[in-house]
Length: 282
Image (cartoon, one colour):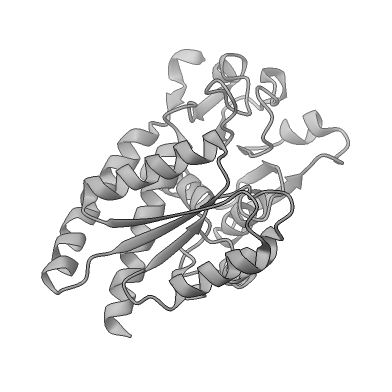
């Protein structure tokens, strides 16, 4: 069966999204507006610095401005919120991304909630989540949106399928569950307290791995012919699924790296351009 397993190429999907953005960015610039994404980084976590740099480079390649704000490790919640409010009030900034995790002493949720819904291009606010649950989100969380974009690009059927989501984070597991539900999948959400996890995963026509543990999902958990969307990205470029073990059982699977990750960044850029276009109409 492994010969039939389709590798879902995220780079290809991401390139197609970015290609479609080029003309839109060009048009905006001609009309006097350059889309701008502000990234806020608190502290000096090397992985976070890498992510912010990658996002900045991706912006540059498309002609999107990238405003980088780096704050000291000891920045307080109040100071961070003050910086976010300044970006909210800056008409040249169309999207705000707070790189997480933030240092432990900061109230991350309060900082996320300070981001204006019109600029919440990463889909991290509670209002953004609620809009997503109702199928009305301007900017759904980027990784869930990337998962859906890959499935759509490869014409993977969702309606009527049983989707098992492993992970319940507010910016990944929960929102992707809502998006799948809104597309008429039957959704089971699993988490760290779930009993008989392997049995539940084995019922999934679609398995979304979003647990943040390397090689966590085992091959013998996978229903023959299931579609695996691995949203994990762990140290050493390892996903949340044991790729080699899961591959023979799946009909389609995202690799790590080169699967969901590139499309997540492309989605962030798309949301920034969307926000810039909306600001022109406001």
